[in-house]
Length: 194
Length: 304
Ligand SMILES: [Fe+2]
Image 1 (tube, each protein chain N blue to C red):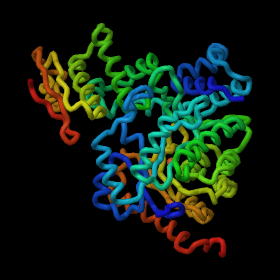
Image 2: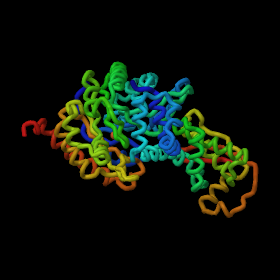
Image 3: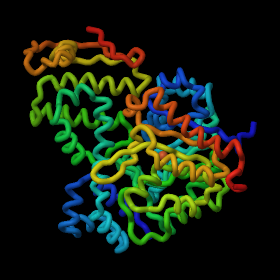
Image 4: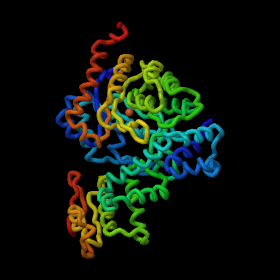
């Protein structure tokens, strides 16, 4: 008889190459977290040692990074190589990923904003870009919401223009409290200064 | 009109790169296959309304529905998940079918959602094949019966691509699928030729033997696609044009599938720049050549 725990164990292993290594080195420390039959343990033992297991782990990561790249393009550009490190940290703390792009993007955005807030992540202008892109995410998946008012500590338009020029890291933008009305017209982003 | 056995021809799996192509080349495709989950946002089981329209996407869907027949290809039923069946999702698909009159619908022989206590299910990130065991067979039969009772359409089960193999299963894949579709007239098979090819490369599976073993009279649709290598394995990445081996296998499979109603070319939208209009037309033409070879001369292969 197959158990739901086998599905959960397999999915948990696919989500964490680290846990796969641990399961190979110290099987009970991982397998005992689940109610598995002997047959299911044999199956997991086998798949963990197959070449395809690392492919499954990679596919999991590729599929989970896709919504972040798709909806948080400027955030991804700004973070550069840091994105993968932060996404991995996020996946460790939020293993309950959603199939919905909107939820997944929102959870990652809030994870980054919380880190900025407490100071464990310091990244100039990231907060502004995130506020903008989370607003766009909400607008694109919530048709009932037509527009959003978003407050920024730096002028978001100046940030976007500097990113476009590739000079954001060298420019010193003035701190200024501004609010914009954010909306989409034919899928194109529009910003109106308030 | 009774569409029960209508043969459609060659279609495309819809993705976000296609609107412009379709606008100018709609006459190239005999039908369009859609992934319904792309057109609505699922707000979670407790939300009301649970499924919310994404207007831009729905606009495109309505346009396509006016041009050509549609078929639905689900990714979200997660039929393989134990102790779980999202009947609200099936109910929603029933309503969508009433609006769009899909010719058939389908999903995979795998699980991707795991139930949680919250409103949203956990996403396993990849579709994980079910073990081909007796209890899974019974569970899937029951779910498919529910689906075909609720939605009066052929329901197709797609063969998996897999990267790891479970030891000691009760059935082979072909045996499992054959048994699954044998007790329900509306349960049929979506044979993904590229998945089969990928499995043959990665696991030394004999693709033609697989086709010989499968109930080919139950195959209603075939998928074709391209792929590429990653980490020493051949991936079902839908990376542009079909490799030669897929065309050869398609020809072999179509020759043995008297009830085939459509061949669908799948590609990932990020490969559109590689294919473009000409490349897509070429894939469709090649598929049509095989389609015509066997469907314009019915059962010629049996006489030969
Ligand atoms: Fe497929």
